[in-house]
Amino acid sequence: MPDLMVDFITSLDGYGAAEGWPGFWGMESPEYLAWLDEDGAAEFTLLMGATTYRLMSGFAADARGDPGMAQLTATPKVVFSSTLQAPLVWDNTELVTDEAVDTVRDWKDGGGRPMRTLGSVSLCRSLLRAGLADRFRLVVFPVVTGASGRDRIFDGYPDLALELIEHRTFEGGLQLLEYAPTVLDGPPGSG
Image (cartoon, rainbow, N blue to C red; front, side):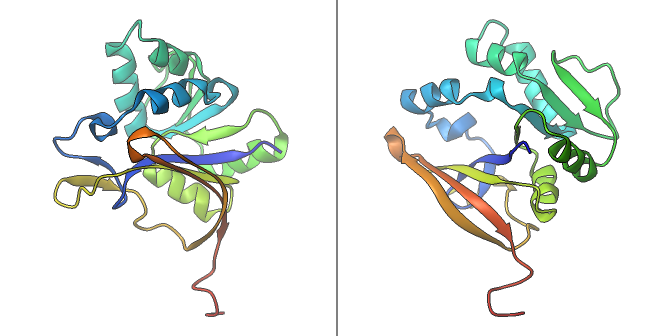
């Protein structure tokens, strides 16, 4: 059964981006960027929703010739959307209009390549809630963006117990935290 990893970058206060801040909050370190290049993304199928697809395919079009973006373009990608229409312009991207949870459950039952998400807060929320995520990975950037933050990642998520599997500190204080998630019916001791 292939694993599914929910994968996010976040500010310390749980935002996926912040108004006026550059990508990676301006804190991408050479060590972190090298790790991203070596992270084995090509071994996974990347899952995303329509909003992330629009953003990332635009980045890909603007960054032709960038080795990191070329690797991402070469990686198999699936977009779950009822608003986009085929054919999609970003190479190696398949459009799926069926329900994401049912489709991913079928893929996990059928075997195949490991999967991981790319952004897509609501898609990740539904996959976690359905108990389909095997790994939950965060890279936490050491900034608080309470005044300018947007895209709160964890609002509306189910309660989760997280077992720490891996951790690492990159230069500049970026923290990699990887967990095995367990969806809870409620707070411990409430049932």
